[in-house]
Structures are given as C-alpha cells and as structure tokens.
Length: 191
Picture 1: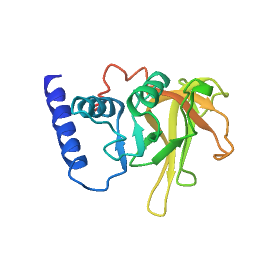
Picture 2: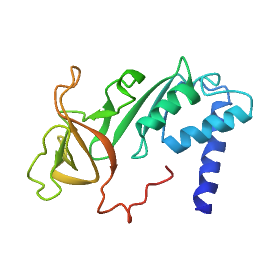
Picture 3: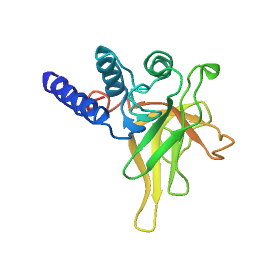
C-alpha cells in the first residue's frame, strides 16, 4: 500500500506540473481516487480543476459509484466541468454512461460502443443465459472489429442489466463492481 500511495503521489505531481505549464489542456481521463487526489492537491495550491482549465473529464473504474459521482460533481468539480463515467478496456473501448444527475440518484448506466462491442449481463450459473432487466449477473463482452473477434468473454466484473436508452438503443449495465468470486484476488490498480 505504501508503494501505491507513493505512485499515486508521483502521478498527481506529474499532472499538476503538466496542468500548470501553460498547455491548453481541457480534457482528462482519470480514476476516482486520482481525481480526488488531484482536486485535493490543487485545492492545497489555492486553485481547482476548473480554474486550471479542465472542462471535461472521462473517469472510470469499478469504484465509480453513485456516491462518488455525487461527491465529484458537487464537491470536487462544481459548475463548468462536465464529467462522464466510462467503463471499458482495450478489447471493448469506452462505454459511456447516459447523463448522470441528482434526479436519478447519480445512477451510472454504461452502454457499450456498438457495433464494436456488445455487453451482456449473464447468469452466474450459466453464462449462456442473459438475466432479466434489473437483475445482477456477470458482465460478458463480445468484440468484433475488422481485426478481432472475441465472442462471449467473461469480464472480471458483475453488474445489473439495464434496458436500452434513447441515445443507446441496446442493453446497458449499472452497478459495475469486481466479480464476487474474484473479489479477493482482483487488484484494482491505483484506484
């Protein structure tokens, strides 16, 4: 844990250095813990994420919960900074969330970047059975590009199957977290 904290401090130091160097950086990709650490460091230096020029944030990781989303939007970012939760990996790309707000309890629902990737939520007992909407299961990913076809890859995550959304007329997933049977053995990076 000490090594992780040292690494996190190093990453934040690099980010502050880049953001303070008069580059026109307006968008960033991050994780919940790194976003919080960056906001705290900037506050210690008398500035904020918005004041340093960031207006858009893509953030992801299984620790991206509705509670963290509310905290980030209301307390870390404030007005003028748009944040969208993302979910993904190199096989899928990024699955964006439908817009998140307090009206829906900061619920995060991800939709895969179709046609490149399809997310399904399948039964813990039978990975060929898609669970009903609102039920929890394991995330299964199918990727199809001109270079790669990976059918039915079981992710190290679980979540709830969600119905289609106007902008994304296909199934989504919410409540993403490490798959319970792997939870004790899964390392969640610097998150």
